[in-house]
Length: 472
Figure 1 (cartoon, rainbow, N blue to C red):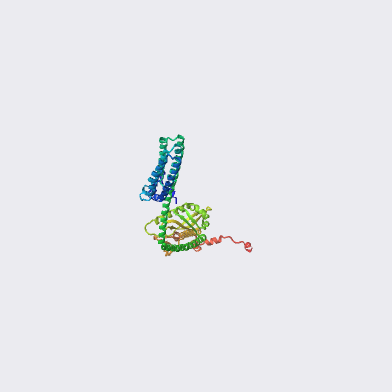
Figure 2 (figure 1 turned 90 degrees about the horizontal axis):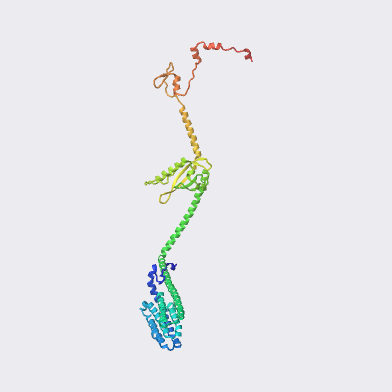
């Protein structure tokens, strides 16, 4: 507790100021009551020494003894006795500071009067009595710094008046005495200032300690009143700690299992924030992309996909965010599947299937994107092969034309009637309804019928085989 930082005193009067100004009245009362025994002892001591110094009056100034004793025993000593008696009254607390300061001035003034009435040699040494009065006022009597300073400088001024205008003290003696008076006065002021500052500081510190002690006592009372409640709270906390510890152990085991799955599953698992920055990548991502998980975390999404695939991914993200901002209830855990073309680290492209879903916070707001990536290049290749076969079959089917149904044909000329009722040659009809192409010729029967004897002539014109050749 730094009481010096909190205590505020006026630098000249040493009164409490600022936030501490409310302490001034209480300090004054307590300080007066606390210093009352000290002031009584100071008055008794002053009465004793002021009276016993009458012996010096007999020894040093016997001619002026009666005057000195009158000052000592008829003026100053009775005044000290009256002050001592008044200290046992209630009114004394109100006027103690001006009374003690006045008593100091009267005692010092009495010594100044003795200096005036004494012979020059005696008067030159009696100034020491004033120094004793200054010491008594500043350090032995417990009065505030301002009152002690006031009485001290009044005595200095009174001495100057007496020494210069009444007794006409030599300059050297006056200078020497002033050195002692002023030095004693300044030293006394410093001592009195330090004593009062220490007293006020101790008072302030005590108040702070009392306040803290009251707070501590209040807290202790409250703790005593709530002892059972705190015990129940502690028991509850112990149960919660045990449950939390079990939950953490379960979570640790679950994390280990999930990490084991994530590190050994064939598919790649990634998480991204809503700005499409990677926040996690499973080790299997290296088989898929050629990049390590640490390298993936440093890449931007657009660096991993072809421009068309990246544009599609941005479009789908915008659609899903817009859908989740709709006021009507929606199923927030429906995944979205995309097929995108991936750019591998070695420069090759690879088709992958992304299954994406949002990760939600406690306020049902999407905060991250969970992505499961799978290599579908073989499936894409199979799909392309299947499409190629389908196209070839479709083309083959388009090229095949089949004649079906009832065909009306003339029994005599063999012409066929088409759908418009026209009779056409059989080869023309078949050519129109199929891909068959005719080449015309004449069979032997029709040749004999149409060109009789032609075949016989052709046979006769054929060359006769050589018997020698046949024998070979």
